[in-house]
Amino acid sequence: MTLLEECRAAIARASNTSRASIWFSALTGSVAQRSATAESDIDILVVLKDDSSTEQAWAFREAFTAEYVRLHLSTGRVPDLEWPGEVIGPRELEATLHGAAFASADPLEPVSADVPFRYWLSMFACCIPLTGSVDRLHAATDGAADQLLAWALDRYGIEEIGEAPWFEVWRLRQASPVFLASLSAAVDRARAQRHHVVPSQVTLVPPLEERRLEIAYAAAAEASRQKATPHGKRHSS
Image (cartoon, rainbow, N blue to C red; front, top):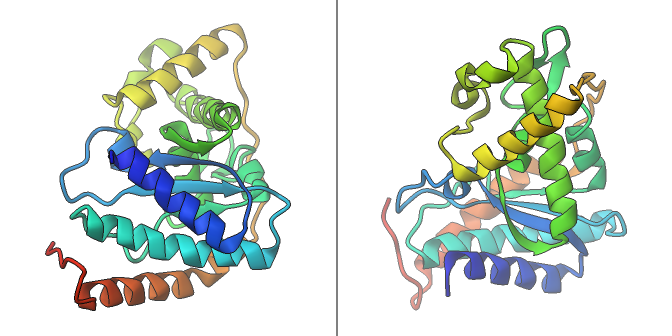
């Protein structure tokens, strides 16, 4: 199986276990940007449907965390036990695409690096479809790229956006074909109509983020169990 097929299978198993409904999922991070090394962790973003209950969302988060760890250990990679993938709902998606990644305007300034909306915006701007609605994922990618372009245009002309510190601020590599494609499409849209972003007043921590310590603990426990399993493979970092 290819890595994409492995990711899709892991997400399907987590969904079947929890009975949660998935809107779409995507591969993001260094793997999507083609800058990953053999041991880079695999960043996966999952958006659940709004008909998933809180209990189903948490059940999926638990099952997905276990699958995330298994995926890494089975492919010889080192899982990020502190941030084992991202699982969000429609409200978090809506907030991410409507200014929650920014703290102020004129010029746009991103929120602090540890606020999830900031890295979710980066993830949506550069990702590869895995499961679910490709159209919804593309709409999210367009929305994220438009916001990031608006941020760049506050500082540079449309012909100089390559000068923006994309990696330093957003951890996005301009050399990435996936990000370059989404940014180029945003530029084409902006030439017809410039996009303005109004920072959102969202201050609440998303429900699943409130349990981040539990998520990290579950990931560490699963990694320890997998490495101790007689039939499992232990991979060094």
